[in-house]
Image (cartoon, rainbow, N blue to C red; front, top):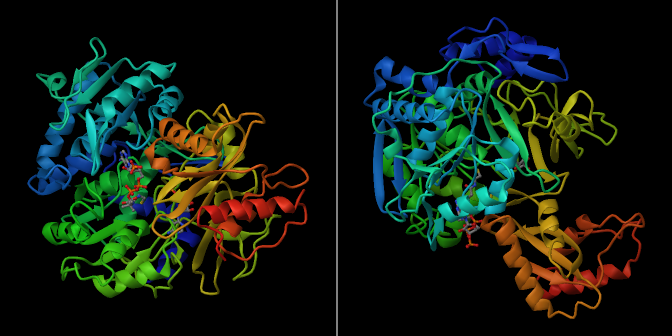
Length: 628
Ligand code: COA
Ligand code: AMP
């Protein structure tokens, strides 16, 4: 079948399409219906089914005779180790961990925070929660303690599973002190913490609260898989919103299983026995869907890579992993390729990679230079695809497993079945091809996408459904061409994308506003050759603060690292007298971005005092920006 036929099949009978896709999953109770629209515009999928995610990701493959196949390959250049875990071993390890968690009181519906680096134990912790029907929330290691504390208070976990440390090339990330500080800060206290002690750093356990990963599993009864309802939350993953408070995206169990399993063949052209590698982090949605769940659900071997694209030890690291482990489909962010291209512009370090079928890019706009470089040197299709934490899998892609469509550089290709993507004007009316607008998806969203935000249904409706009734608002702007190819051009909110990491400038402004000498501030994302965007702060100081500007900037950089974490990558700020605003007081961030990036810009008609833009331009020039 062609892509057009498959998409047409879904359009003609969405219910039938997803029930057929549900055939790829082992059910405890089979679904009789796909969509539940009884609370429209809030939708759920497969609500009358019961199922277990861990069973589908692990146990069923052992029963099918794949027990000896590698399930996880841990390749860790930062520790100089490699380790293979077969499906049979994974089943044993996960059942024991789940048994130990159960013995400590973890049950279906309890929340468990996982705070771990790129080690197989992170996946095992996720799967052990899934086995019990406990709801995990993985927190990325590059966040500061206060970000962890916010998540602890929002999802109120009964337990936290953490590693003693993570390894960044230049330093050891001390997880345990961050964990302790976060628990101190949070109002909610977990009943217990499980600490996975790594060789590189053994953490001191807190008596009465902490248990050690190996010891607490000693002698326990392994746990069987607990069936859960189709709409039971599999996990909560926090992502940046427009305010400082992160949004807890809820992933429903059955829809997630059906949809990501479907994508493994349709989009990534992978099935049981194939080796799949997503070079991301378990703390992000790509890591949830394509390091942990989807490849395992499909019976593939997944690679857990603890290293960087460059510097561990060089720009050939990715190619070494692909060649050594015979990776078939490889997924990374454009920023990682830009880092490799910078070190190896001629592609001299790229060997012949016979196993590799295609390279997939997502997380940010894939720039044409990067795509050309990859096409030239890897000699495989380079597939840009577009998705969000909220959806959990691609909204638009080039579905290699169905049909390799012509690649149009700059476009993540076409809408996947399940997604009716529309470009709307401010009034919510679809615009004609080639016209820029807000990208929205006609409701209902397909299975596996977020049904709501954790404990925040009102916020879910306000953030995504209120602006364009009948649609889900993606927060991205762009256009569709005459062939139905999508082009994602910008965000419509204050989210910026730094090295493939989604960050909120609003949250950063809240941090800067907390500095005692800062009266007013703005944060914008300016273009960055390597990371796509880079945050830049403007600070107006309190009258009479009498402070050295460089000192205040230094303190603000340190404050951001302390409050949000190194991942914010906030390294630059500048002190200015005033910020450019509209007459109604709205800061003209968009204009500042255009000036910084040397893009054409017009004086906003509503500006209060045009002279301020000269001051801003001078400030940007002092940072080497606005050179145009
Ligand atoms: N734990 C703790 N700290 C982390 C971290 C983690 N898991 N990941 C990143 N950090 C830190 C880095 O050490 C760095 O700290 P520093 O300010 O002390 O140097 C900071 O966060 C910023 O990191 P990053 O933006 O990743 O920059 P980098 O210079 O270390 O690396 C790249 C640049 C391009 C190589 C890197 O960003 C990269 O590989 N990006 C791909 C991202 C990706 O795959 N995203 C997933 C989306 S699909
Ligand atoms: P996240 O939720 O962290 O996955 O970030 C999602 C956002 O990243 C999207 O809303 C887009 O702004 C951006 N993004 C992801 N993939 C792409 C892509 N292929 N092209 C352009 N932008 C993308």
